[in-house]
Amino acid sequence: MNANQKNKNLFYTLLGLTFVCLVLNLPLKISLFNRTFYRPDFNFKLGSFQIKPNTDLKYGLDLAGGASLVYSIDMASAKTADIDAALEALKLNIERRINIFGVSESSVKLTKQGQDTRLNVELPGVTDINDAINLIGQTASLKFMGIIELPPEATATATFDDVFKDTSLNGSHLVKALPIPNPNTGAMEVSLEFNQEGAKLFEKATKDYLNKRIAILLDDQVVTSPTVSSIIPDGKAVINGSFDIKSAKSLSAQLNAGALPLSIKLLSQSQIGASLGKDSVDKGIKAGLIGLGLVALFMISIYGYLGFISVISLSIYGLITITLYRLIPVTLTFPGLVGFILSIGMAVDSNILIFERMKEEIRAGKPWNLAMELGFGKAWDSIKDANTCTIITALILFNPFNWQFLNSSGMLRGFAVTLLLGILVGMFTGVVVTRNLLRVLASRKKI
Image 1 (cartoon, rainbow, N blue to C red):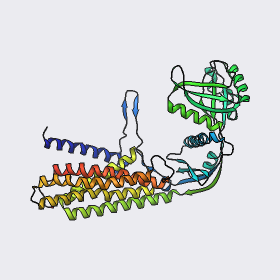
Image 2: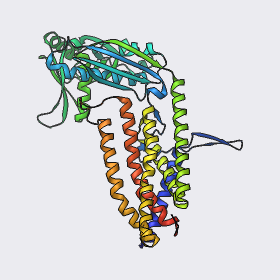
Image 3: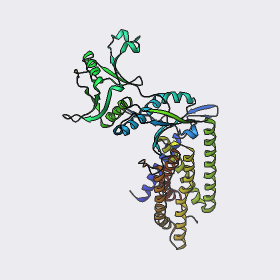
Image 4: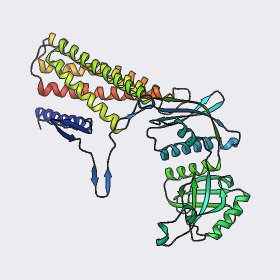
């Protein structure tokens, strides 16, 4: 395959990628000429395996509106050795409650304020802050309930009390839950250890429900319901099943959330109206369009036809970037929009460096096609070095490893992630897309 054919194949591939990104970013419903058109869903199915990505843009608290809550945590009731486990269990339990509440793109973080630990909760889209406070503010409730097997004809009208019978065993009796490997098979299990009173209650429960199931409920939601295979007198048991390390740790954390309850106290609350968020989005989009238009005008006025090609590349850059926001997904905040707008200017920088290098080669008497290739080659070192420095800065702001001595603010992280994606996509479009468009579409032009 010759070089021209390779360039054409890459051109058609980029054209197809641009079309897919364009379709993904179309509104769900478009009305034209008194007819309504619907954007196709992107569903992928292979046998029983199906992928149905949610391509809606996700907005943070400042854009979607919602509630922000800050809690202090009383750790006096936790043993020193259990503090980390208790905090993690608390965080996971709050996240689980929020998921049940139906809040998407929520944020639950533990932060240090001097010697105190705070729980910061952000709930985009929540309009009733009191509901959120009531939901989060309860201490975890862990219960062990026997399950009564009912005949099929009775299940339709059965109530909670018909199915679940209290064993008097609860989270106060559980010393700890740990993920452990089975010493014989290596399969992951979850071990349970009860205190003295709990051991007696557990022995009675395993005797009453031998070969039956005992449900473990956290905040009245069934976490798991293992079958009792033997009477357990010593208060030590294991739950086995199809666990991997992640699911075993998750179940342990959920059980410990009830076994190590930490009370929390609301310190501050604030609510951002959705209208403020919409206004921010509208202004951000307007600023982005104005910026894109001014950059396009500048490039075309300075570089003519080549500037027009760079504008096409910049448009592809925008489509790819927003598509990544949808697919990853990236939660957009207002600083995130600022990062995107900033990255537009940085994306066009690569084209300016390339075109100026091309000018130098043409002035040195090189043929246009050779000047183009040399321009890209010589500009690459500058593009790589400049963008590498910005990537390092963006990673420091994003703080992917949650280092305590670096930023942990969601707003700054939103800025960092959009800036980082913008830089990476900008390098791709500047060096690959623009180069291919010039090879395929541009003949000898003066610049």
